[in-house]
Image (cartoon, rainbow, N blue to C red; front, side, top):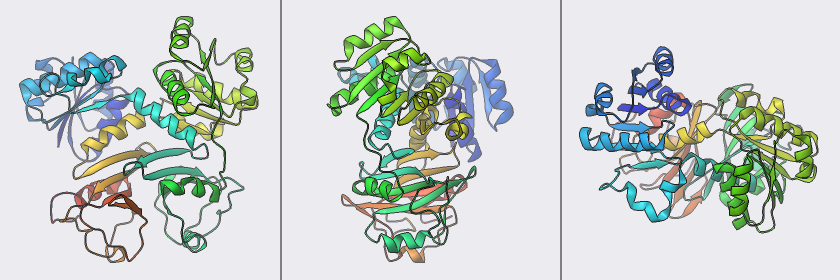
Length: 458
């Protein structure tokens, strides 16, 4: 597949890295010669210096032969115009744009992105995507990561195995015997910096991060079995009143009437602005690194500190300070892809990477076959994919035990006719089943092949 990416920042680089590793033909455009040189030197892509919204630059990048354009520059207007030019002059079939300004996304302007006006096939709004991810984490505080699939009926949770975890040193096959009615499957384990698909004879160890696919109604029970029975937060302190912080505070006010919310915002003008938009939240003007401000926010008695500023260092330090002052848990926004590896050591209970969230959303539309959802794990080491099985799929009509799935692939759940089924050896996949599957990065192409309109397999 030939893809043109406008923007060589963190998201553009991440998408280019994934697509180039899968032998796609990738061209990247950016106005910064430094970024273009860096991405050209480090990845197997072609770099072009220029404005991605200009026809001659798009032409140089091969837009006339492109299957897709992904516009993820820092500017909404450049992204939108790039998609318009790609459509009008080069007839690019699929157009994806990152749009941050909520003004463009209001319901009353929904026709703006129709084919007759601005023909963008997929709109990515990082603020909304990240905000929803924060809300899901707050609703399941025992989980280090939470992603939903299959009309929200299947949930993938990342669970840290702490020293008091009841299932540590227990073979996974024994967990099935101990909890036969538990609608959950361990599909991946992150241990000592490496991610792998466990075998039934494997055991979970202290400090493992287990990725578990579960029925939605079994998530809290699953967390309890792993020793995480933390109650939902009733007192939340939010550091950062930007777009994401405001979105989260508004949603908490609407969804959880008993939740007490305090927002710390460093800009006085912004603090006044969000105070006018929020009804029950308390707004504090000051730095989240100021101990006096944290005391004023009663962080010592808070259930969760959520750091959502644009500065990773502020997010990390404010979370650490809050924890030291008595806050039960913390959740940090981390933009730098290097920081998550040190998050737990620094005292961060859970983190969210806007880069990973955005890349996952885009990959959903890049993946070939009937792919309905994608979530990237551990900087692209693996993906959790929701895909629809076609009649031609090699998975259909055969018991799972008779399908020789390669190492690095694990079926987590099957969504059929509105019901979630947990996999076993006797199960037979049916056409139109939606399957949630865990795949290591080097197996993603094989998963795509399983769900394409083809009789070929591997």
